[in-house]
Structure formats: structure tokens, C-alpha cells
Length: 82
Image 1 (tube, rainbow, N blue to C red):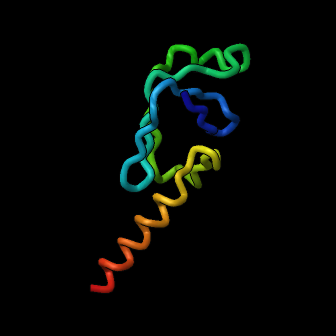
Image 2: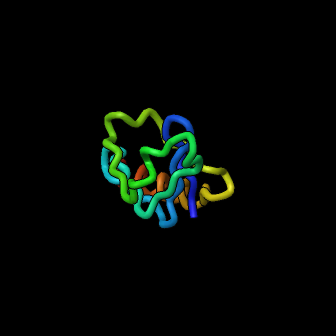
């Protein structure tokens, strides 16, 4: 399960988030973290967020495999040099 901060941390997704090219984000099986404050969001189960409105995506440090990211960046840099 993952929490995703949209304006004020109102959405929680029960499945992994899919992030597409240009930072388009798809949330599935979402629930509202504060239903009393955001009752209009209770009927929303899936959500697509257009990448052009995304400023940044913040991930918990313990859920990011930095070694994998560094290896991928190195491989990409090596391929671009060739």
C-alpha cells in the first residue's frame, strides 16, 4: 500500500502507482485518508493525473533502491557515449 500526496495528502492507493512518460500518473483502487474533510472524493476509485500539473514526486527514502537507480544511470551514460 502506498500513500500519495496530492495537494494535502488526501489519497491512498492500495496498488502500485504507474508513472508514465511525461510524469502522467495513474492511481488505482484509491481511498480518501480524511473522508470527513473530503466527502466529494469518496466515490473516486481510480485517478489519472496529467503530468503537466505535476511539480514533483516525493518518495519515501526507504522505498527507493538507490543502487539500482545509480546502475541504470551509469548504463545509460555509457550507451550515450557510444
